[in-house]
Image (spheres, rainbow, N blue to C red):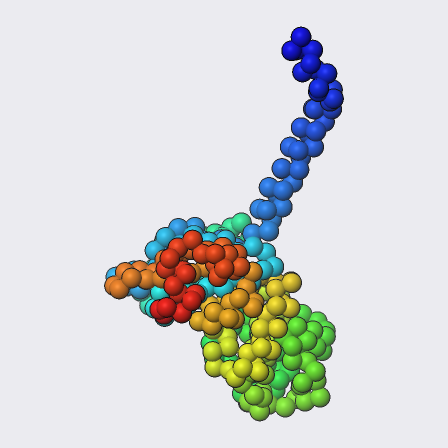
Length: 292
């Protein structure tokens, strides 16, 4: 009797169950594949030394495609060092060593056969202080990355307009492209540097405190540029400005280093969670300005 009731209550045939199971399995596979495709870069158990001094230990983090990730934490906890390791710039410092793996589009950028120059074209860098070539024209600055890298691209006029537009600078300089870059304001120079980095078509843009030397108005323009750029490229930004991290970053990682100890990630996740509901007391204290 109970068996009959069970069957009567079950309105789906065996074939229907199998069909649903197949759909669910397909959906799970599709979701898994999509998730994998969304990861532009990831660091796997990365530790870094300068000589005998270990500055970072056991860093694991993923950077989803076309998002902005903020690296926050007090000075000296290894944020900038880690940022530079993402395109192998840190190894230009004598005595630098790295353990672990950093994958870009599924491949380890530190594999012996990988050319670091190629990596730095695909993973660009914008530094703390604007560093355009001051005596070179605005147009020349934008195209200088192409010339220095040996990349051959046609339609230079189009490249200049597109990259300056993406960097939020076109309307301000379109009538003086042949003027010297040194005549631009600090904020304009930083956006020019961003345009120069974009000219080589990077997939990732690393930014090391790009607004720290700028006034508030210029900072807001750079932040708007970051938000626009992250629709098309992946951005990783080091910042000490907590409000800036909230404004521009989809995800945030909090770095910390105890005295005489290497830096590490205390907590990471969506920016709304890190700032609104952190799981570690140290994260809560830092984002609320109790130290650092």
